[in-house]
Length: 450
Image 1 (spheres, rainbow, N blue to C red):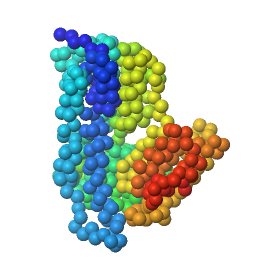
Image 2 (tube, rainbow, N blue to C red):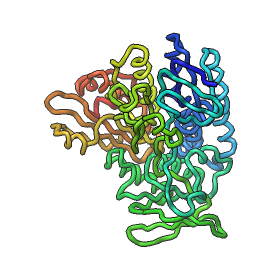
Image 3 (spheres, one colour):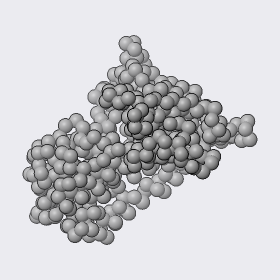
């Protein structure tokens, strides 16, 4: 039997929830589908649980930095199992709460893998859903590694559910997932190795600040290898052995746990998009400026499943969900504005950015002043015993416009939000110089960084 709706949403994460809720409030009949527990990546397998697990390592690291400065961290250690229990106090209620919320609004809920039958019909199990409009918001999943022994590798989703953290952990990939998890594991006193294919890790962030973070990472015992191509993973009597080509030399690395942090891809391959005449590429569903499919006008896409100019971040998914909802309800008129969207690597300390990298600004032909500030001697850094902190801010010379800001250090993520607010609202360097903040605080540093 076919059930008809004004809107069928595939996914129940941030973007999906925004679209479904707004259209339902406008009187549309709405159905949502998910083949995983309701809630999406951020709430269940990403941002939120990651930050919950980070709290323990954050406290241990803070205490160790203050040793000899009034704190005696003798015996302080992380109880990983208890930390997991703490985290699940937040994540476990999410699926039922999210599904209950949909039902209370009159949104029909379906569980299973969605599959296009034609341009406007979705199959999920034995149900057939006809949608006047369809939104794809299925998020991302770990990309296949394509190496022998891949089944022995733990995904980032699985890492966040580990009851026990082994003593030797190896991470494949040099992006934010590997670095965030490596910093967690290192604070449990595990032996940690990171293998990255390129000449440097964290390529989406400023190379000078990323280099300082690499120094900090090595100082806490993380063994980082660049130009390392993982070739295979195998089990041996001691645990797992990872074979990799490092600078052209084949080497073996021993570990008890090998974690996949080598990138994610849009989770769209099970949707049978061809049957729905929905065109997609490596970056996701191809959409126009209104986030409408370029090949099937009944379909829109948002969040990590869409090939947009926005970075794969939860706030971007929310932003794009709002744009899709506006265009569905009022006709195509809205486009996403990605100005001033910050991102961060939640290492300890955190590395954050908003706007352009130095090389990107030069490639665009912008005449910018690049101000690099070594902050290691600053009060806000020394107060907490941090050893690595710096900032780089890019200001357009003829306008005073801030085109990029990059921070490493304590409270860098909160400070980057102030730069983001300034950029999104057209506040230039002079506005930040004249900003009167609470003191002492991370915000009180801003005027000295531009």
